[in-house]
Length: 328
Image 1 (cartoon, rainbow, N blue to C red):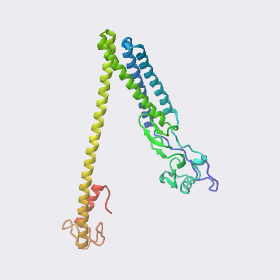
Image 2: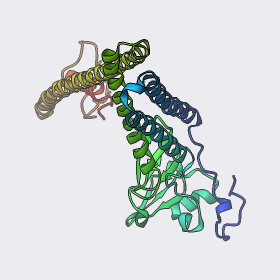
Image 3: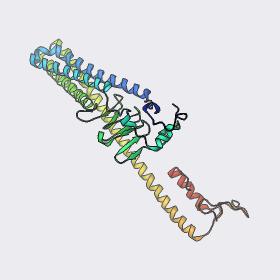
Image 4: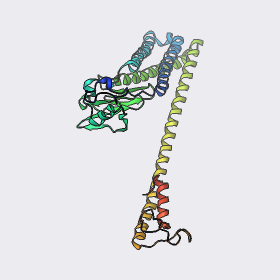
């Protein structure tokens, strides 16, 4: 891409624009593999456990209940796979480059494109209700349905953006009949349906195992008990992580609040002292030999005074350590 040698009077076309930014392929690959593992793992677990407890105990549960549990978990798995395909291969609502989406270019962006420079150094340009993305070089029209957002992982502007899913590696966007958000909501609901159906089968198998006492029922009960214990362990571990994370966040917020209050108190005290010090017109050297006779080294705040001002130096050091920027 080099527009430096092009005719400046010729109107720009889509071929003259720089290529779109590359997505974060490494992060996307990790997220996509995680999504495949989660979806197929949950489907395999639900179908395997449901049939594992239904086959040994099916005779005592009744034919209608047996078929209801088996059909429900298989239908949920099939629908989840369809939603999974929509999530991976469907369009969430990416703003594609076109003549109407890219042009007219804002003057600042057009000047950089003609000079062969990158426009990402600029901020997004707002004109009325529309916004021009300087990374994708497209207009995000308000009439297309806000909110628009540029995903940092996918490096694309998406209409009706909701969030970027770290499990499936896809942007989740759209409304009731557009984008991939309906498929995302559906696959989550199917996960709950599958888990609840498996839980119902497990409870029925445990009841049958105790009532019959046969070897087949015992096998089904053992499978059901193992699944139930594993679910309890997973839920307890998840709850523990959530509780620990919230406690850590609360402690961190309290520490930041105390630190901010302490820093604000020091800053206020120094500000009051600086005001009184500036009004007094006096200068106290840091050490007896800090400022020699005839030296004119300026104070950080008042060049008319010498550099050995103890209060000025202390104030500078405190502000630099608390707020991570020098006081100039």
